[in-house]
Amino acid sequence: MKSHRSNVFRLSSAARVQARTERPLPLTARMKARQSHKIRELAEAIKCARFVTLDEQAKALGLSRSTAWTIRKASHKASGLSASIINRMLAAPQLPPLARTKILEYVEEKAAGLYGGSRTQRRKFAARLSIEKLPVCGETESTLVPEHNGITGANGERPWVIPDGRSGS
Image 1: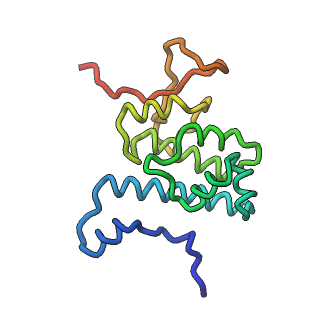
Image 2: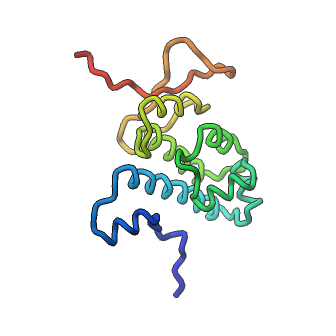
Image 3: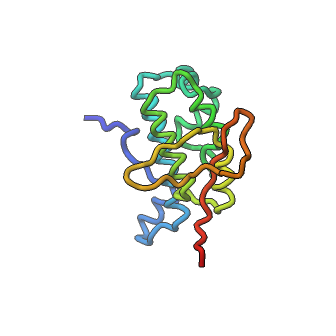
């Protein structure tokens, strides 16, 4: 029986070298592997919704063919999916519900720092999202909260920011 390659988590070349030498993978490499895996899950969700050809996938995601190809191959640049790409995908009218869920999971994880990035980078990412309200994943609190400084976007929405985490002491 032939195994389905897209269901198998494939290690990067750096991860394969680490596995052979039995040393633990550096934290940044593990973060990037997790990010690639989540992007691969998004590509799989699009395929499961019967968008098989690249043209169909691009249209469902609301992206160009080249960007859809990059997501399909989970070979996105080191920083992952940008806020503008995410905004375009979430605005796509044909976006399947499972793909929307995967995108929102990606947003939560990226904003929480699970894919790396400084606090400032994560704040800027969150501020660029045009998501009115993010769902809470599992039983944990959402990592994004509305900024209450009176500033709103062109559409009247408040930007989302990552809390400072500073204590009162």
